[in-house]
Length: 137
Length: 137
Image (cartoon, rainbow over all chains, first blue to last red; front, side):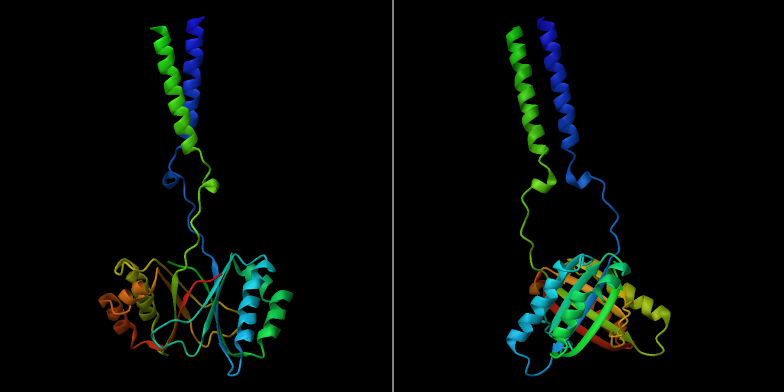
């Protein structure tokens, strides 16, 4: 009987050790997926003279809000120019949108939410520059 | 004696179970750091007419090579324009550099490796646009 209990305890110990080993593989040793290329969509804006702060804020919020309306947007960030180099050509805003692929962008461009946004910004935007690229390292 | 052995086994079992529990916390339940703002440095290039493919490749490789020479570059990617919108203003290349902060950029800009690269590209670059921004979502 004691040997049976001893064997049961040892068996449980082995089982727990096995589970422990499976779960304790360090994150760094877990298989990594090869980094996938994604499609970046870089949009620079310059606003017309006379554009108010409120109008600029509405445009910033409008662009940021597209992420929740167009599900092919995989990532989004933006910011205002702080370069000390003086080579911004007057562009004050950079919006940086990520798609998985061209299909994602091709859903985005004609999407009603994007087209409404384009109508909103049209009267205020003095200049725009758009470059899309597939990521390389 | 048998009780002592039993107690030792139980003690070991408890210890292993404890280790197992610590290591088996799912990744998703581990505390997340708040996403930190980083400083992006967006560089658009247009090359002069007559620039050869070999010269363009040397410039692409030269920019990509800065990451291994300037340790304040936290991330780097680049690509060539594939936008169907026709708003690239002739810029064909986007280089996208990430710094932790202004100090990182302020090491990069005057760094000998960067300055040598600027000398390399100077004769071929027809136009350049640079915008830096702090990331916002």
